[in-house]
Amino acid sequence: MVLDQGVTVYTLAAARDRALKVFGWDHITKLVVYTSDQTHSTIHKGAKLVGIPSCNIRSLPTSISNGFSLCPQTLEEEAIENDIASGFLPLYLCGTIGTTACGAIDPIKELGKIANKYNIWFHIDAAYAGSVCICPEFRHYLDGVELADSISMNLHKWFLTNMTCCCLWIKQPRLLIESLSTSPEFLRNSATESNEVIDYKDWQLALSRQFIALKVWVMIRRHGVGNLMHHIRSDVMLAKRLESLMKNDKRFEIVVPRKFSLVCLRLKPKTNDLNEQLLEVVNKSGRTFITHGVVGGLYFIRCAIGSTLTEEKHVDELWNLIQEKTDMLTS
Picture: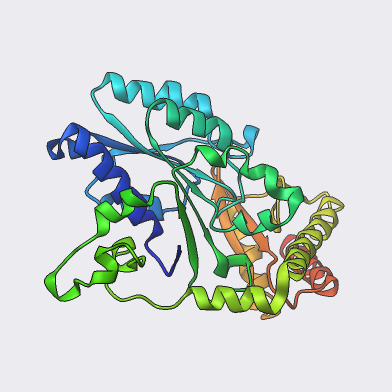
């Protein structure tokens, strides 16, 4: 299913209704959602929108020791088991392939086994890094995907598709339809009622629907699988080059090991304030635009490569600019 937005809300609503059909609607304040402290904030927003109290969202801590991924042992022993003992109802777990801040990857197979053990809805957020799985060498990151109830990815992030374009796969579509369907008299028709067609009004919040899938079809027809794979691999190689340049400068450290085309660096052992200043002066130059992230209390600079026009010379120019501004700030 191709959507413009709302993926998280849809899956949370389906998970909520599946659970409350068993336990009763008076138990909605007992439902618990599990994430890591690196999970995208849309999970928190979506949970609140479907009626789950903010205090029932368990944002579990991660650390640099395991690349800021969600620890299965922490999830089960320090969160799920404690919640069950306290009378709560574990509802929903979100694992991520390529977190927003630093590109961390959660252990999908291990998390999926835990979710299945406790009958928790397991959603995989592959919004950024899901696109890399078109290349065989990256598909191992999806090991365990068969254990998921749903998985989403945003083609507008790295897959040459215009905003907005989100894809959602769901194991049991009927659960989504049961949560989102409406049947007012003015919408009744024989094709829908006989199941001759898929009526997407029952798969989303909006009644009407844009033909978003068309731009995906055009993108695939225009580029083809071979060129799409080349696009991903080229960006990853450019990120590797940037990472290698940074490693040769002892003033910098790589905060999180690079997995895809996102490079996270900071000046060491300098303060967060100095790294903020470096980001500001680099962006004020007007020659590039980079962003920041914070993990484990460390402020760092994010260099994300994803444009179709980025070449090796641009990576070298970016690094020269960062060095130039670093010299200016530290002299």
